[in-house]
Length: 311
Image (cartoon, one colour):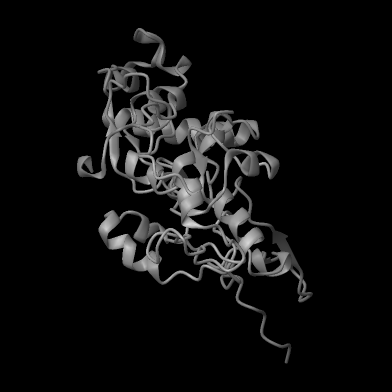
């Protein structure tokens, strides 16, 4: 008696691990194997790699939904902790190891380079025609759902796109959606602006999240005992040549290099004649200016003065 033939309805489904980046390329995407419909008993399979072309539209739209409002996190905090109020974040930051390198490997970590940072929809649409079509299809769904401009979608679906004005098939829905979508803080997701927007860009940060990542020159001089010449010599990132705003993670990286710790320096608690609390610094309190900090009025263009209470 011949051995029973395999059931052609049984297929080996693909498995994609949720821990992206932790697997080898062979383990990240496994193929879907389907028995070949041949008359003989030879076992032959066809292999189809999982790509964007054969993923269901529902899966692609679900992936794109995570890119509607780009999200990063504050240094030393998770995305959930970044949305907490500053008073709740302080106890978490107090437990941070100040002898470890600063948290620089984050999306949009350089606050002063956002002018060159595109929205994920625009970046994805620029990769290929197929990705552009996927983004445009999902964006058209978003525009039809909100329909801020009262476009005649029902009439176009019933009588055709050429029967209405403007021609709905010639609209770049990605741009239309990004024009009308709410603007949220990149770190805490607080809503900073609703349509119509008044000069706000696509990527924004609230004042609280900006102050958590930037320092003034006066703060750097008092908290880390560094002057503008030291910062310029080590290439510390600032908003301009006058060091109005300085990126905190760059200052912490330099402090770790010079002093072996990212902790604040203290020359006041023990008296002006006592040296700094950081052994490798040794600066006396009398050498630190006691003048009041100057007021910095101007913020970068992508930072709004809206606080988290508007969330």
